[in-house]
Image 1 (tube, rainbow, N blue to C red):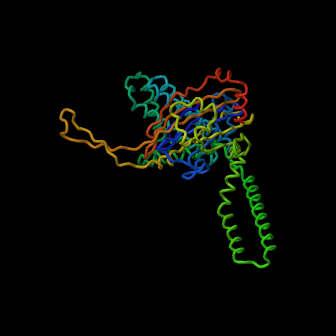
Image 2: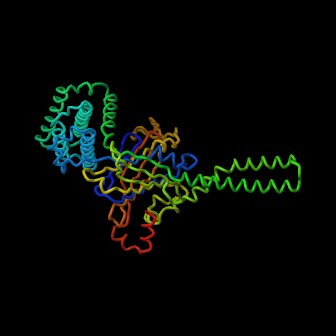
Image 3: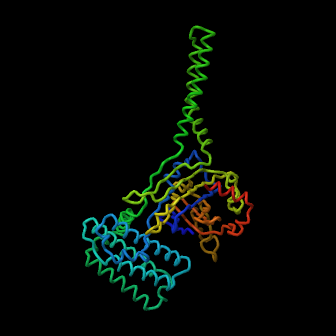
Length: 471
């Protein structure tokens, strides 16, 4: 199951953990609202893929299972193994803390998730600070990791202190949290980290964001993107040129047989042929190429291990805009009232990931699908409409208030995915409310998706058609 997290004013991030090799499929359908004018003219599929979508994968360490690496510090002599190991541990710690944060936000502040967060932070601090590396590059990486972890753990606990219900928790738990925070402050002072925590809140936040990007770089799988279809486009271009020039040459020779002299009308005819060719050529080549490549992936991505360049996985990606009748039958049959307009565009993103067997020998892999809504928010036209109401109900018309109205668009995000060894698909749905200044609201909704048993009872021909479509 994917978990959704907001990242800033415009970005959403969907994450899940890949635990076994095989074939993973993800289909994302973004149903645009009636007021939206998204089309290939305003932003084509390639621009949307580059500017609004980010599909990345990172190593997720297994500190509980990797007993040998804990006791054996020989790996610390090797770079970049040191950075990959500790970076994957930080990845795992952040993922666990994010799950606890979502649990607290959905169910309220309770003792159990807070105890687990404190225990995770204490264990990670002990494991991280057991030994300090000797190499210069590793010391720099360790310093950034130590600073970022201390700040991240403190921010989580301070955020919990501001929530309703914190004062009602057990005194032992609150005392333990305060003791941990005091220990972190003493550790920063001893290690001379305090300068990194000084400055305005914005400066500190940006500094820690920079540290996070530097720390996660060694554990992010390197992607090599290949845009497919260029060979088909070249063949179509060559074939169209050959056809046009053949017809033109045939016309020219026939004109010469009737008249031995080049007339002005013949020259104008030749110029018109070239003008029409230049006018229609690009559109014709694009149309024919899309027709020939209909249903085929648009990009192929090879995911490589950091530093060693070992192949970890291969990914095929599809992205196109469709109308409601063109959606897959399974999605169309189980779409509710939120998908009834046949005229609006639906953004369809599909990814098929084939994970190699050797990719999960020591680590899990975290899949992160990010959606940047800034371009969609820019399409919302600002309004100056105002709603007028009585300021005081006890004294009507004594004073009037004017409330500015912010124009908003509602999107529906449907996510359909399968995992290795499963003959059924699972779906999740969210409703996104976007405003001019970013995401206003994001809430989970029921999908009414058929259960695995119901999917297995489908006719065999339908199951075979769906299986072939996903390949």
